[in-house]
Length: 221
Image (cartoon, rainbow, N blue to C red; front, side, top):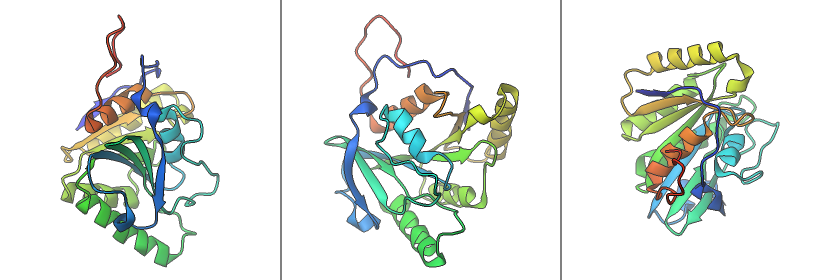
């Protein structure tokens, strides 16, 4: 378990994730693009701020659609960075108004995707810092552990808490996930930019993105 401290979100000298563009949206992993290259997926309970995080990390205002209606995203949405690298927005989960049949299909599809997608290098798991480790979050972590899939947790909406409370929440979640060796964790705020550099660095490593060329300033890796 590795925890990342609170930061101010100072900008990276360059952001290769800014090249991300919409590729395809599919209801089932079996309809996904060819299973080659590398990809990183984003998952999280409905209304955890997944779309906002994707937009902030990539540097796009509307790459992923945000909505005030939880549970709206019900497809796997693929974004292409280049010919061999992708980001994937997974359906939001855990919203009570989603019909049981949809929830069951989501569970089957996600388990199939996480266990069978060879190009998947890691999962960004988003949890509201005020309500972390729900039953659905734990189920996702269990699937990833079974699939030996690295997970990086973003405790989102860190701006909703004071600095001390946010840091304490980080430490508490880190403690509760101490038996998950392939999980790292950090605070994140799409609104304030908190933790953006750390999240980009993790994704960059998983995607094997080359660091920015030396310009006299230190890369945010």
